[in-house]
Each structure stands twice: as C-alpha cells, then as structure tokens.
Amino acid sequence: MGPPGAGKGTQGEILERRYDVPRFSTGDILRTARREGTEMGRRAQQYMDAGELVPDEVILGIMGEALAGEAARNGFILDGFPRTVAQAEGLARMLDELGINLDAVINISVEDDEIVRRLSGRRVCSKCGVVVGPDAKPDATCGECGGALIQRRDDDAATVRRRLEVYREQTEPVLAWYRASGPSVVDVDGLGSVEGITKRVQDGIAA
Ligand code: AMP
Image 1 (cartoon, rainbow, N blue to C red):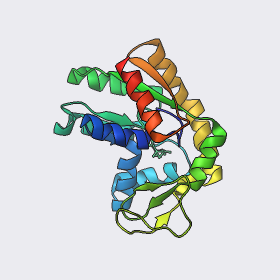
Image 2 (cartoon, helix red, strand yellow):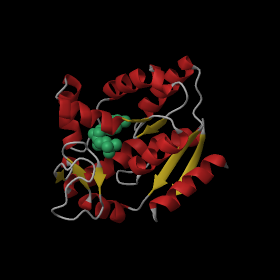
Image 3 (cartoon, rainbow, N blue to C red):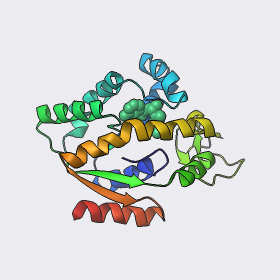
Image 4 (cartoon, protein in one colour):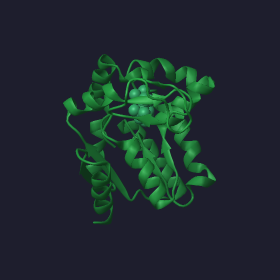
C-alpha cells in the first residue's frame, strides 16, 4: 500500500521475482483491459482518467478471479489493492473461503511534493506498459520493445492532486483498519534508492 507514486509497482515487481510468486496489480489489470478494449476496460476508463476509484464490485470481481486461479496457490503479492475498507472486507472474506492468511501489509510512505515530482516526470510505454522515470528523457523510446513513451493520462498535475485526495479519503482508512485488526503493517520510508527500499521491505517482512 501507499499513495500513487510511492513505488508500489517497482517494489512489487522486485518482490515478485525474489519470492517467485505472482503480483496482482489492479491498476495493471485495468490498463491492460483498456488497451484490449474489453467491456471492463471501457467501464473503468472514466474513473481512471478522473483520478477516481473504479467501483468496488468491479475490483472485487477482478481479484476474486485472480485469487481463485492456479497461479495464486503458492502465495502472491497484491499491488494497489485493497484501496477502500469495503475492498479490504471483501478480500478478508475471499481469503477466509480459500483458507489463506495475509502475512503482512507493506505501507510505503512518501511526501506529497515528492509524489508530484515523481509522477510528473514518469513515462510509460504506449505498447508494453513498462514504466520509465521519474527522470525520463524527452525523446527516449522503450528499452524493452522500442515503443513510444507517453505520460499516463492520470499523471497530469490536476489528476495527481485528485488521486492524492482520494488516497487520503478512501485508502488511508484501510491502513487504520489493518492496524486495528489483522496482519502486521510494515511501515517503510519510500525515499531513497530502489535497492535501499527493497531492503527495508524485506527486513520489515522478516521482523
Ligand atoms: P494504479 O496504477 O494502482 O495507480 O491505479 C490506477 C487507477 O486504476 C487508479 O487511480 C484507479 O482509478 C484504478 N484502480 C486501481 N486499483 C484500484 C482499486 N483497488 N480500487 C479502485 N480503483 C483502482
């Protein structure tokens, strides 16, 4: 967990390789659905572009499918989910039915000014979705597939401000919910090198 631009995706990808478990990112799943033009992608579009949350029932549907799949049998990392208390409650019910315990909730924190700086410089590949930044060069192309680099529609300054508000209003209460009950919350300072932050996350999980 953490505000937009805290490094959830970056750290999630590293942990996914290190622990050899899949990462389920609701944001990535929704962006893929949009690129492919599915019904769900079309439904999510207006919310994502406005910096608002996609309705809980859509998100719980996505995660219900992911968690029930074979890939989730030996553990998983959830990235960008749950983002509301209703989603956390829905997740708790699904995990209960599957007989799975959450080991830890990792909370990466970063100040608002740094988030705005990071997201305004972030670029993503229009073809494969890989993230480049926060200091992407203006005419660079994707190192993975050569595709054009573009700014995510929801990374413009006004939408970033709205996403931060939504985070404070709807997602921070989820942390309070986990602190009051459930798995241990590992608080990690999200400033510093990517490797340094990974080490903090791993130390926190091991503690
Ligand atoms: P992200 O890539 O995690 O920053 O997500 C991008 C956008 O996708 C968010 O601003 C929301 O519009 C939507 N989204 C991703 N995950 C969720 C979630 N768990 N609940 C509601 N909306 C979500």
